[in-house]
Image 1 (cartoon, rainbow, N blue to C red):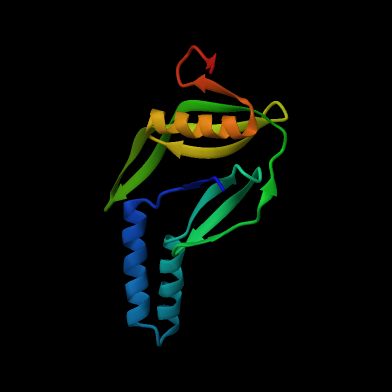
Image 2 (cartoon, rainbow, N blue to C red):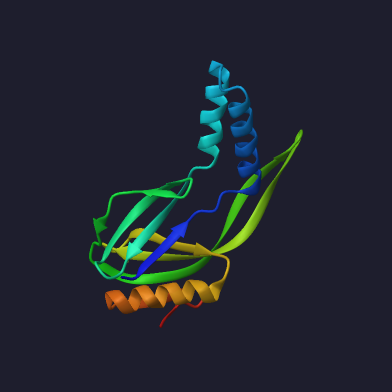
Length: 156
């Protein structure tokens, strides 16, 4: 059984806030505010992602909380091709009273069907890892890979 799993990483600052709220919630568990802080802390540990089972040709969008994964499996639609491309993601970072935007380049693997519909399958900062995942998916589904990491797109 070949399963590809992608979980969106929790940003470090969000993780630190979650720990802080969780600890405050535990220390004041006997009050309503303690329960509120505990619940808010748990929310900061929540992340989402996707799992792809290449053996059964199913996928599911997942919700991950404390190592537990939830989601409903769905059959793949008629996938036409796998695309690998580079894009930038901008995140706003707040420190005290100042804020800034942090931009980073990521490589995404998408599965396209019905001409322009897509399933976002994987995201990484390593181009080689993205192509390995794309080739693994393409081999299992017997489809082509589109390299769109540069201006000149090409089929692999």
